[in-house]
Length: 206
Image (tube, rainbow, N blue to C red; front, side):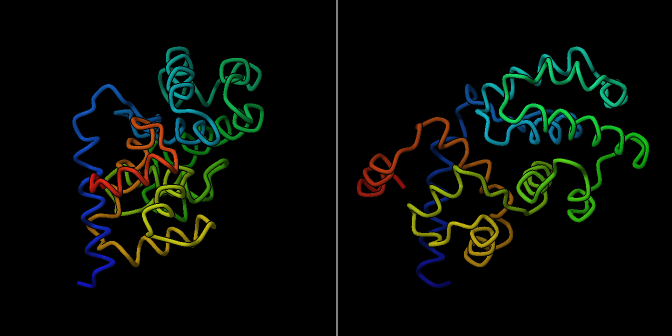
């Protein structure tokens, strides 16, 4: 194992220790039902997890099943999710995706990334985050991942797809599915800033 890979794995393990016992921090994708994981991940783009979770709770109280959501009115979904960024577009995507999942997949979420990417509102990040939550070794690259991966020397790229490829080359497969969960929790808990990450790195914390 080369030194760069060894160091990156050690850093990831240290980050995991910092966040694994923090039950007070919940991520937008933390739901027991698969369809809620997917819908909330669609909602979470460019929106804080706290906002996404609160709005998701309201949405799921009114529409407790995927079939109920598929039968909702676009106007009502817009009204409920209005606090999230790009709510008009997301409302359309959520309604269309719900209908496709009900009518085409019998309320089951596909576990194939290419099929997920065919769903309205599901880009590569959303698909990868969803699959990682289900136990697949995929890496969902968001702003937390982009920032921390660059600061920790895991990548020099800014393009999410290129960052994903860099991390796949750097980390053995068994670590990949946990990267988004660990780094996003770290970013949430420590409100990550460049200066702070540098200090934690210098002190050997990560």
